[in-house]
Length: 172
Image (cartoon, rainbow, N blue to C red):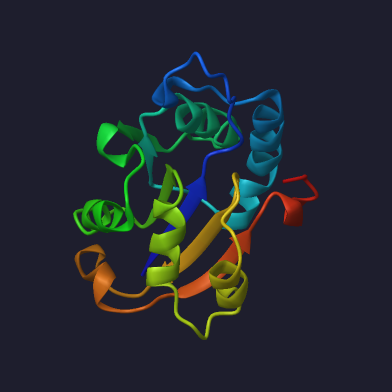
């Protein structure tokens, strides 16, 4: 059995003079990332691997939310995850080594939200909130994956947790 966690980066700066990929987190995004990090380890347990978009805002989110993890999980910053759609994300995930039991993906919308909906079993407790709403900055959807990573797209999976900054007492 595997666990998959999809985390959207925190709020970023909207400075017009900075290229999209290089936009840093805003002060609010840094604060939110720290709050997410305070609850993340208790919420998802140990992580074997983190796949993170190479964008500045996702790298900063990763550093802040993983600050309390000891030992630190292995982090791969990948250009292919920058603004990746659900198909590209799924393709990357189906290539994971089976030894990776718990994987956290830190990326962008709309790809993460679309992937989460495509993977989610409609009878999961968090399905309605996930499918019927937004996937705001700082949101996380966690799944139990009963089969192999290579077969991830062949079935739907139970959502075991859907957390938004608002549910953590943060504004969004």
